[in-house]
Image (tube, rainbow, N blue to C red):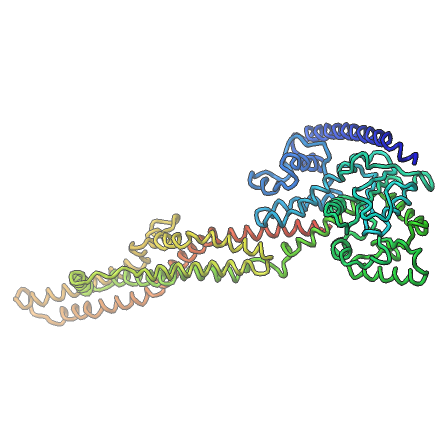
Length: 637
C-alpha cells in the first residue's frame, strides 16, 4: 500500500515533467517555424518553391484559424489562388507531415468533409469530424505512451486483472456491484498527465504500479480500468463509451459465463471489428474450468469473434490477441504482460487506432461516395439534349422558312416583269381583303416549355445515373436550377440568334429575319437576260404597232420572232433560275437551322450542361479524396 500513499507526490512529478516536455516541444516548434519562414524568404516568397514544409505549415495554420473542417479547397478555388499559396507565414506548431501515410489520409478526410459539406447533411459528417478532432488531439500528445483500457462486464474480473498487471491492488474488487464506479489509471512512465486529462481522469484516480519484470518492461503503458459496460447505472455506460473512443487499445475481459453475451458482441465487439489490431480479448477465470472445458470455451470464443468479423492475430497475421488466463491465480497473466510489452514497444498503437477509426469512417461513408458504375454524361445524352432543345426552339421550321424565303427571293429577282406585276397586284388585293391572322395559341408556348423541362429532366437523370443518392440529387438540382429561365432565353434566341456578330455585311443580312437573302454571283447575269427578253417583247410589239399605223414598211417575221423569243425565253430563264436556286436555298436553310441549333445548344450548355458538369467534377474530386481516405493512391504511387 506504500505505492498508493505516494500517489499525490508521483502525480505532481508527472505533471511537472509533462509541463517541461510541452515547453521543450513548443521551443522546438518555434525554431522549426523560423527555419520554414527563412526557407520561404530564400525562395522569393514562392511557397511552391519552398517545398513540402510550407505546405504543411499552411495546412496547420488553416486548421487553427478556420477549424479542422475548413473547406480550404473550395475557398482557394473561389479566390483563384493555387493550393500552395495559402499564407506567407507558415504555422510552426504541429504541422501535419503529408509524406506520412496516416497524415495523408487525415488530410484527405479533412478535404473530403470540406468538399461534401454543401452536399451532405451535417449529421452524416459528424462522425468524420469527430475522428478528425480526436486524431488531431491525440497526435498533439505524447507518442511514447500507449493508453490501454481494461473493459468488461459485471463480475468478469477486469479490476482483478488490472491489479494483477499493476502488481498492487489499485482498483477496488469485491462482491458489491458495480465495484468500479469511475475510471482508474495506472501509468508505468512519467509524462502521461496530458493524456489522462484528455480522458477526463482526475489526479486522485491516477496511480503508479510496482515495477515487475525486467527494467523498462511495459515502458509507456497507461492502463485504465473502466466501469462495467453492462452496469445498471447509465452514467457508467456513458463513461465506458466515451473512454473507449479515446484510448489507443482495449483489453476485453470475458468470463466463462458471459463470453457470449449479446450486448458485448452487438454493441461493442462487432462495431469495433476493424480495430482488431488494437484489441486484446482475454478469457478470465479459467481456473474455474477443467482443462478440456477451458479449451472448448476458448475455441467457442474464437468462433464468436470470427462471426463478429474480428481478425484473430494467429500464425503471424495481424489481428486481435486472444488469451486464456486467471487474474486470481496469476495463470496466463505473464503471457498477457509480455504481449502488452511487445505491443507498447512499437509505439504505434495510437497510429493503428487512428487508422482503424479512419477505416470505420470510410466504411460508413462508402454508400455516399462509391458509385456502382462509370458515371458521367455521355456524348449521346448531350446530343439528345441538344436535339430536344432544337426541337423546342423550332430550328427545323426556321430552316425551312429560311429556305422558302431564299427561293422566293430568287423568283422575284429572276421572274418575268409581267408575272412579278401580277404577283404584286394579287398581293395588294389579298392584303386589302385579308382577315387578321390569329395570334399563336398559348398552348404552343406551354408545349415548348414542357419540351424544355422534359429535356432538362432527361439530361439530369442521365447524368445522375450510377451516382450515390445525395450526389444524384445534387446533379438533378443543378440541372433544374439552370432550367428555370431556359425557355425565355430560347425564345429570345429564336428571334435574334440568326444574326451573326461577325462576317461581312452580306453574311449578316443573310441571317437577319425579314432581310433580303444574299444573292449569288449568277443572279445579275440572269436578271440581265430576263431584261433582254422583256426588251425583245417590247421592241417586237412596238415594231408591229408601227407597221399597223403605217410608220414602217410591213414585215411581220422579224417582230413576231422577237416577241416569241421574249415571251418564251422569259419563263425559260425563270424556270432555269428556280432550278439553279434550289441548292443555294437548301444550303441557306440548313445554315439558318444550324445557327439556331448551335445557339440553342450554347444556351443549354451554359445554363444546364455546364452546372451539371461542374457537379460531376466536384463528385469526381470528392471520390478521389475518398479513395485517398481508404488508403489507396489515385496516382499509382
